[in-house]
Image (cartoon, rainbow, N blue to C red; front, side, top):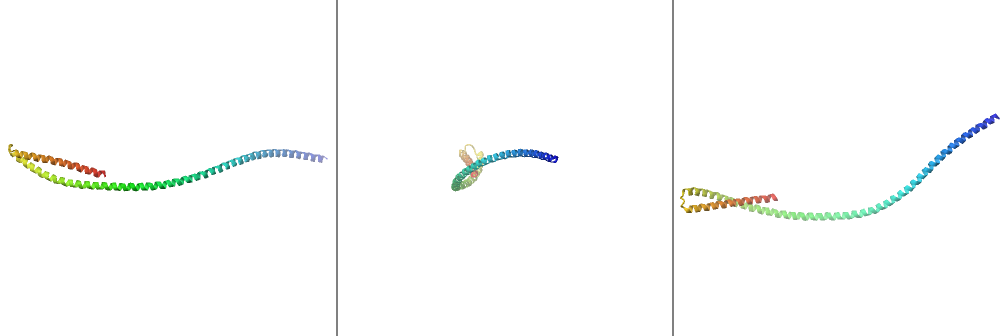
Length: 191
């Protein structure tokens, strides 16, 4: 009987240990239940958030599709406007080039004419210069002669005066030639 009492006491201890283990298991189950509830709540929140996000994404995709259509239309309009602009630019370039060529041809012709006139004037100036040199030589001769001639010979002094007038006219012509040369040089530089 003592054996049975010992067995009962052993069973009691085991029952007490089991109760204790069951109590611990219950606590753990309760904690797990709370964790599961928290996870379930988070899952529900996540599902709601996912639904809202999906709705938002669908709405954004819809807007993007509408915007894509608008962008495509704008792109086509822009492409058309760009082609027209390029055509107009090409026409303007051709007109400007044609006008520039015409103006350059006119300017070149004017320069050629001016150069011809300059060369003609230069040749005339060379002739005048030679004549003036001859005239100076003659004037020098007359000056020497007039120094020896008496003052009363009025005709010689009158002739000397004409020679001096001719010399002054020669100097004026030389100045005009210089002015023309500078003008032609400026015109050449200007082009």
